[in-house]
Image (cartoon, rainbow, N blue to C red; front, side):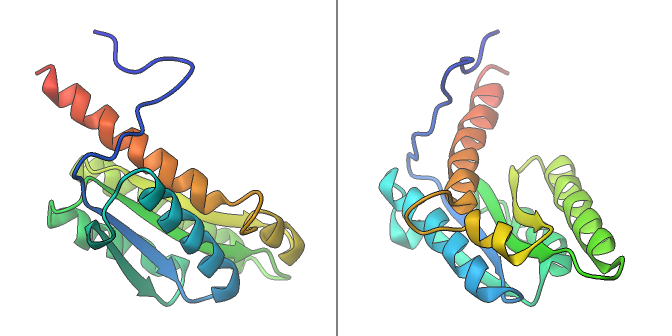
Length: 160
């Protein structure tokens, strides 16, 4: 069985529904990621009414929200967006690590792709560079990943 190719993935939207979870913490940065992700989904044929956006306080709340959404089975993929910037305490390590682990666990538990679109940077400058509206925007990358993973999972199940 061969699904996809090494060069390009299938990013056709079809009639799939997507959920985007966006953190309010570091909101200016996350809002740019959200614009990038939403715009990318729309540009690839996802209907505006097929995109649900949920706001949560911070990155630590992303996994629980992703699990609740995934368990509804309404979404082909879920995109988790946030920004955790390293500070002077170990708080960064706990939040970033547990957020990543939790998001991964949701996908493994439910079979629904949950894309980790959380910036984990050392500085505000790095976060700004990765969330530009007319340049590098990791929200765009997260949306493209969600589209591809939706199709990959669908292809795997189609060959059962």
